[in-house]
Image 1 (cartoon, helix red, strand yellow):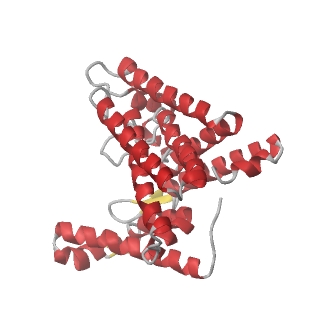
Image 2: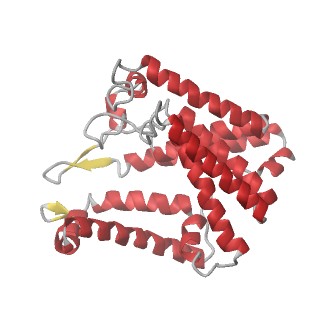
Image 3: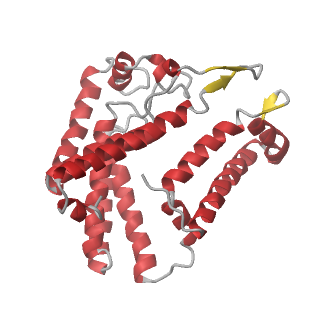
Length: 311
């Protein structure tokens, strides 16, 4: 957004609004379909059973990204970055008040007692929530989206700053100091509102933004100032097609655990007969690395052919 905003300023508001809404809806829909895919399930006997839309998860990672992008895009288009940052901070504090004021007394910050879960259950019902923790709980719930907008707004502000001063020692020093300040502030806030990813607390927002600033400063110093670029191709492949590679990793993993091999699935067979031979933990780690490298390889082939999937 920090790169396209000047182009947006030269276009009509109707055109910009259409672009924002289109991208928001497309990313949200891709996330929803990804969780519904392949639109059927296998029971314990590996028989195909229906997977009705009434049982699908509505929210998720891409849906969270879509909502935060849409809200932040409108904020930054109609308001100045400073104003957008103040509004983002207000949303973090407002969410903090909701968590502590409306959650179950004594369990406001637990997985089962937080107001975010209660709101999601009221609005969507248990079948539409994430069940990977053993209970109905969505770490990308509706209320948790409020503070997460701050991550996108911060990314825009940092993106603008890097374009103006990112290649200077002064700019990198300011970016590094901002990161240290945000991490320290998050650490202080942690005593009152824990840094928690599943609840996406305001302290978590400041902590992650601070870390991003520190890491970006280090990367820019190495790549732009020191001109050390021989190692970057591996990471560029992910950056060129992030949405496609993410979808490939998730949909491919789903297929691995749907394709039957005897009484187990292909993913289970690979783990049991190949990776587990190296030990439970080591085998699990190598399985994950192998799958990541497979997805990277597909991304690398697309990069070689200059095919980039955009939404």
